[in-house]
Length: 261
Image (cartoon, rainbow, N blue to C red; front, side, top):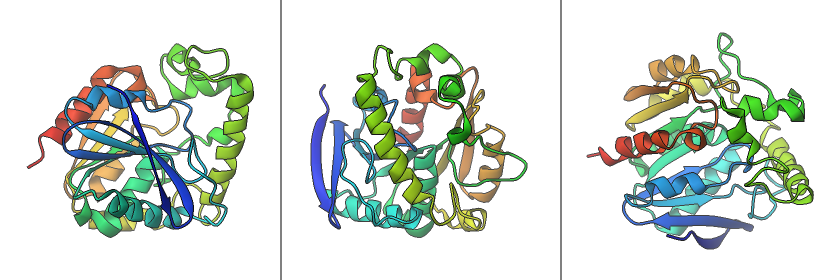
């Protein structure tokens, strides 16, 4: 099964979406970079139709210099859902995409079915500090992203799934600028996010790798206490890129979505 590529103009932003599979719709939001790609979605393609948009300024999508905070991304994605004609798709978000998905569910949860937050960023709880990866030396970043470092190394220069070093650096520069725009208002998160989470009406799965060195799995309890209909799934011996480290993680995510009523 091959990925389709579709694109839409969303408020002047050339937005590229990769799509694969058949079945109920899933909107899957990537994190603060596109290093690891979207191949993980093949593991759900026999049960779902997965839509994987590149955020404005990331991956294959066009630039969006007007963006000055996460709220711009929330509006962008809600317009994208309408443009795609999706009727209550499931919503999945990883890392920064998890923060994004959480805020979308806060303001428009009724437009989605189930919600999966995979090691979401954004909460910034003082007792469960996330790692600021911008301060991690580049040569050490793979060991922060995956418990089995060799998995992350596949996506870095000279790795089996990496682009050319020149392309890798060009994409990192482009996405770094886009991330900087998102962080303009409140950094990675919002000081009131914890107060808002009780508005999420969706059945929610907090999905975490036990060995996550970017966003500690201990955060899951804080999120779960705030979101009324939520449960926690911690996977042993995997890190931040849980869906890439262990195919069983993708299957568990799909099982949660498939059990919706």
